[in-house]
Image 1 (cartoon, one colour):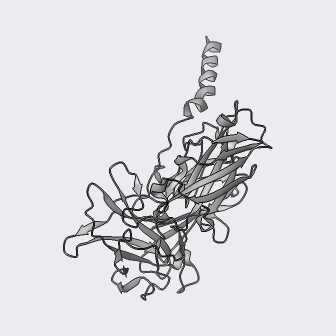
Image 2: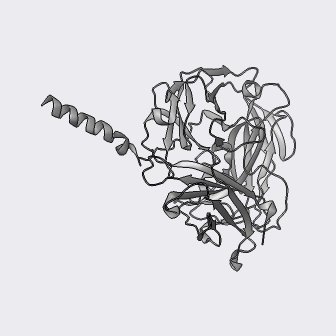
Image 3: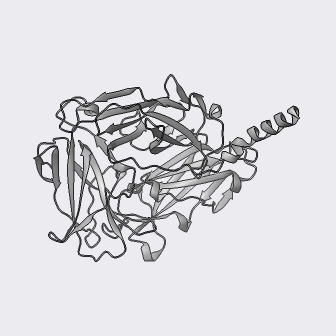
Length: 418
């Protein structure tokens, strides 16, 4: 009987990773007191969460409650669809899966008190061993998930050539951009390219724009060709708007006035809808942001916060939709905080959101009850708009236990082809 029970125990222990595989890992939006969440590689002018295997990156954030807490973090390996891969921790990590956040410091000489936390990976307690999609969870003192962030760890085992084109659909030729790309497979020894290779395509690494489950149009001579595919046609949108609060006490470009109450208040000029205006180019950073200040040397703990006031003038009647202040500053999320409210007195849509000093891109989007983001109802969509497109290539062959990320390609619409 003892032997039978032992065999049954070992059988179910062996199956645990199988049961875990495919389970959805819930994304958690930070509470209102967690701000300025930044996850990026330690490279100049790199904002997106794409990390080469072995390179270092950091996750940092501020807790506006201002008292030091016992926070920890956890890293989980996911499959192509951002579900648990079912791998055991020791297969994808060296060290611990969960560890305390030891790097933290209180703000100094700011009106808004906060504690700044920072995680650097790899570190002496943790190193990622495998490529793939990962979710990093920050845990509170009760070991509950405070918030999550996605990151993609990759190796360059294959080349990916990407190009951007005007839409081939005459109905959208002035509004959409089509993506074409080639995945080179000569050195991959694929048995079944249609099943082994999967791709994901992003516009400006906005998680809401992802296109997946795209089959190649042709397979020929060690190449997978993805062209003339309607599934990878994107609304081009418009250039992002911006504000720069590095001089938090003074009004600068796009800032009408500032005021100091308990904390700073930053009032932007009224934005007008742009869907009915001609396209106009000006440089942006595709929805991202850079924390910076000219007032101090250490933005991490000496950068101050201001309540930024947005106002939008639109003549449209918005029915069964909400308008949001949208960008990477909150990981492209649609929340009550960045939802705009119509002010009957001013006849404007308004929102007030706290931001740390820095340079920020933003735009206005609409969304209905389905959660689908519409980037052109307010801002318009113009084929000339500068966008960065990223193609991520995944490999999982028969018998493999997890999905690898084997290549990344990108192209900018500044090099638009007809």
